[in-house]
Image (cartoon, rainbow, N blue to C red):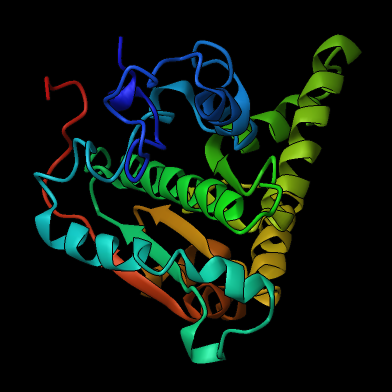
Length: 260
């Protein structure tokens, strides 16, 4: 039984479609764990529904043809990650960031961001092996900003029992560190509102760390890049996100709940 449609490594894998393409493949296990549970996909924080999404099979591709022209061109720069890590890429050629935006939710921004993260994982893993390097266990990280804020609220609620607060706090600070330091990251739905100063400060710290260290980031939002100052309350941070960051608009209405 072949596994080529259930592995993000299939694009470019010489074994894809052959009898060697099974869930027992050591490369599949390294990427997806045992039976699709674990591996680098899980370490990246990807929700299970996005762990097998690729740029080729993304359900958003058909509806967002213009956006995907830019997305495909952006993904073609991922091989530069090895030169960039070695410090041998000119500033003008380093991998930049993307800002995926639409006024309506459910237009495919998150799906596309997850597909880009999977493509980064594929290029990193395969490229590391070709170069005789040990692939990182977490070369990319997916931060669901809403879920992250929920954890923050959970352990900061008054009189919350330790059995609830401590796991939430542990998850929160693990995510904070991973989002700051991963070579590539998705910050999904950064247009947060009604945030406390403490949470907003931590989100600022993540973005500042990534921009300062020139780490490519995919942002998704329902707020246009030029209007982020109304969300963050300061122009400096909005400008930092916009630094070497291309904005790509996703058009149309929400497709959530529709059969694709």
